[in-house]
Image (cartoon, rainbow, N blue to C red):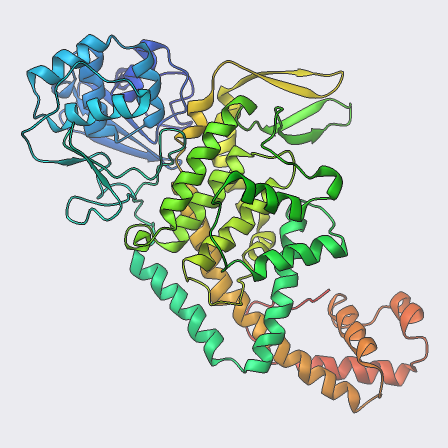
Length: 536
């Protein structure tokens, strides 16, 4: 009576008599399903009351034995919907194995049961198979995803973009389609719409209050900084023409619609990669994120979906994205959540052989722009903030990629480095939980607005002061003044002997000391954490 492999979080303080699974854990164990661990695990034990353990972002509830469901699969799934929440992956895999007649009989016996109606709805929604049941004509509507527990397209009180399934009397408020449908839980730290609107208001107010000449110069710099940062996250140098193409994309992020078709995404990919690696379609081979070890063997950090799964997933992705950007979507899914859902969905599908990471970060900008979170003609240096704490960004990606790698079987052909995924693993990707990624993006954007953006504006003020102060010492060309400031700020406020010999051999010792002193005075009253000071 043990838990499925990989489902028990390391360090969980459980007694031997507290490991009898119920709900999804029991379904996965009994059907021998290969599913990613769910965020909530139910266990049954001889205890008087429920005991809750929160560990590593997951929750284990140990219930008294009187709450144990009967042993049949339908009862376990009803228990799961009631106590564990919704795992579309486990439901989809269980429906492949279950005896359909058992579900039909259960619904006929209790046609008004909210959990059985939801189970019936999920079966037909996930499998596209119609059960031998008549349409319901009695009973109140219930939500497919409880809007109090999940980010949804609507609720019974405010349906918004949700659609009523009259057959089941269920409100379909899922974020996507059966081809691609992420889940976002209403985590206690999930930002409220008011918090997101307030954060956007901070950005708008700051930009409106800034000196307009200073603002335009700062924005021009931020476009360049964001572009360079997006490439540096992947440790990739960027050429002048690719830099200008990416800046051009960012500048037009407010225009048009995002992902109206495969053709648009292909066009974006072609704009940011080397011409030799431009693609005209989704990838046709199994790519991976990894590298080569010293012994020339390959190591893999992340295996994206199989190439044969990508077309359907991308159809679902495009459909979901259009919904999240449609009129009225801001009433149910805030701009930051929508940006995270779109951006991270794209990078986890990895539909191209090259450019996926940069496109994922661009899509975040485009969603924020089209949702009106950022003012037209501006950009938030989110990638620059990510670059400052790349370990947090990597951890956000690995929170999904690592469980996938632990569960996917594959083989590597060492002769050419190609990879083949063994078995059908598509549902592990289609119904991913993006709660962590929404929380992380909110944190990065909040820091960008409250720390990085004010720092960039202050930096320009001090830069101007430094330029004027330098004129009092030496009347040198603008280009050389900018270079002097940059080199000094890269070296703790001093011009190194090597850089001086190479670029400023004409200056005397007294002049160099005076110029360094002028810079020290110009930047001495700068407040903040100083992380945005260098402009190289």
